[in-house]
Length: 224
Length: 413
Image (tube, rainbow over all chains, first blue to last red):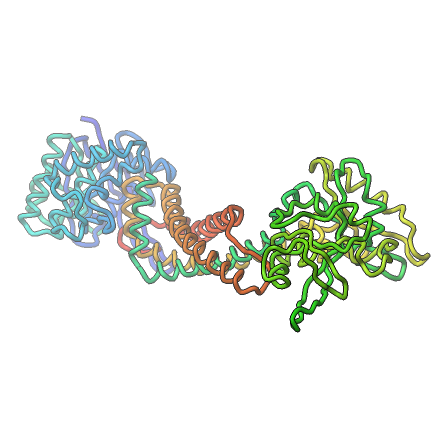
């Protein structure tokens, strides 16, 4: 199976005038295509930073990032934006839906940055919402939805562009356990049906146990 | 994508309503001032009835005689126009008119103040007055010194209480005129066409004007086409140079053929011994004034926009995460800002129309009719777009530079 995510000697250091904080140090990681990986560790150990580096939202201070065999790190802004748009879907703990947009308009966001007609965008967005069982709420606004429903909208937004990589940062962190299980069920379905590679940050060992592999971080270092 | 931007722009407009209200007020107020100023400038300089052929008309509005120790600047004299402007190749017609003089009449014990403008018959052929009654005076009337007059509608009302006026007589400055035509009022800022009473040149109390090189007259040179302007100007310049000067103390005479705008620029910016009029300097002053007036509110709007943007840091992070490039975000925000400024512009447009209507009705500038024609609309639209870009580009650029990780945390660094 080909390697979808490859990190080599990744280091991330945040510097201010006075202090230097090492967020990630010597991270080496390979995630094959279609694998569902969880990342665990105590707060502040660098889990989210790792996810941001993989998702090309943050640039490592040192090391190489390869996605699907391409050394994307050297890409410029527009090229990075294109990779994020085509290859990666993000799911955030706090959903990050745009409050002024309806459910379906939120889901359409990734498709806005592709050459695509409005009708096609709408069709794909409705299909993505159908996958998470939210077609009856397409004209609602985020504030009119429960937390679980908002996260399902966020998942629809993440998968609408059919990315090969899904990065989920504590996707169940703000949900009760029943909602959390529903979300995990959707993620497993995506992995199995679409072969999506999923990297999920979580604090919950019960959820980590449901993934194929768990990477543990401590003080920015990979301990397992 | 544009539809999505517009949809979002509309929603963003209602989010911090107070900011939106302040932004719209700033845009609206700025545009009202700029559009009223544009309308006034348009009223003074742009072609409009009866100066419909202004595009191919050159004027003689200033003459300057210089000597070693002194300079004399004034309007041209009749002789300068009559002797040196006529017969220039490329010129179809030459008209001469005297600067309006204030004259008084008495009717039913009331004093009526009017401006009388004395002209030749060509004046009526260079300009295109739409007569409400009768017609203009003829070459014969001018040759005979006939005491006939064309009056404007307000003067008709003052003297006769309304139509008809043709055939009736009135007294002005101790002279009796018979009305042969009535024309609509022309705004007092229209130097060439304005007047209450138009009478033949030859009804002046003295014919001394015929011998004067300088003083009190304007000339209109109607060219076959604008392509003839350079040769007409050059020919007039060379002819005027041959005019015999009234004394040895004088060494040079100039009386350029130019537009009214160039004339104003010449009065304001030409040096003592300089022949050029420097219209570019007048343009620079107008543009600089408009820029200055736009820039101050634009800076305020930039600050407001920055605040609005920072409230949307998380949205910016999301958009970046899902594939928006910096350029795309700049476009999105500029569209949003243009929507805001165009709405402010539309409000400014309506308010400008009301202000101009009030200004017209006030009679502050006699006979002036200020209106939002398509030219002023064009200026307004241009100004609104300019203002939108001016106040939108920097915040949009700042927004696009936000670090997506920080933005997702809601921070604005």
